[in-house]
Structure formats: C-alpha cells, structure tokens
Length: 151
Image (tube, rainbow, N blue to C red; front, side, top):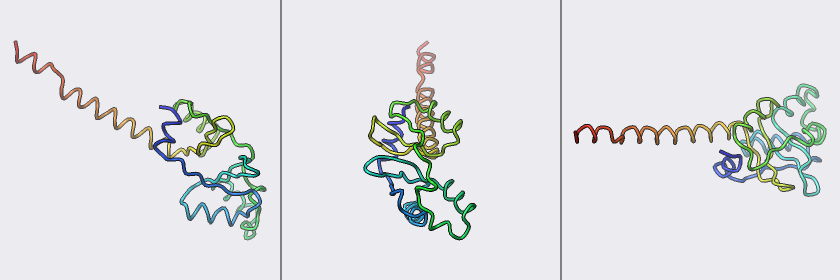
C-alpha cells in the first residue's frame, strides 16, 4: 500500500492557516474541524505545520497569553514531507523515528494532503481486514473436500 492509497481513503480535504494569524485562531479551526494539524500557507506555498503539540508547547511557555501568539512563532517550519508513491511501511517508520503524527504529502511543489498516524492505522487495519476475509473465504472454499468425496 502506498501513501496515495491512504489519501484516496481519507479524502483530500485540507485545513490551512496563515502564519500571521494567532494561535487562538488556529485552535478554533482545529477544534471546529476536529483535526490535529493545520498546514501553514503563505504566498501560495507551504511554510509550516501547526499541530496540537505546538499548541501545548505555547501554552506551557506563554501561560494565559498563549492565544495571542502568532502561528509563525510556534509552527514547525519546513516540516518533513512524503511523496505519494512512498510505501506505508516506510511511512510508518518515518513517522515513528521522527516523532511526527502528521506529515504533508507533496507531489513536486503541490500539497496533496496531510497523512496522520490515525489515517495510517485505519488504512492498515482495513487492508488487513480485507486480506483476512479473503483468506477465510479461500480456506472455506478449498477444493480438498470435493476431491476427497470424489475418491
């Protein structure tokens, strides 16, 4: 399975924010849309990512004033990205090794979507479930019983 297949299952909805907006604006969008990350866009290109991890760090560092911090001051600049034809096993390894729960998928200079660890887990679970059903059907329909009766 490749990253592109996970995006197809997930859908291509992107949630973005400008780096000039405040952290309060970002958390409002994240809460309303029930997402854990926002892609930060400036002048038509991705310049960073905001995840709940950065929000928590800002709360810890700035206390009650966290909401007035700019997105630019807390976002992950130039985040790691993946390509659509990356294999899921490589994606999982990268996410675990780099402690990234969200990775943008780039095709050249075009952002195709964001893959979360949840998206990966769901896609792998669905693939394993499908494979399990196929194997059970194959075993159930095994021709050995027919051959034994014919003898």
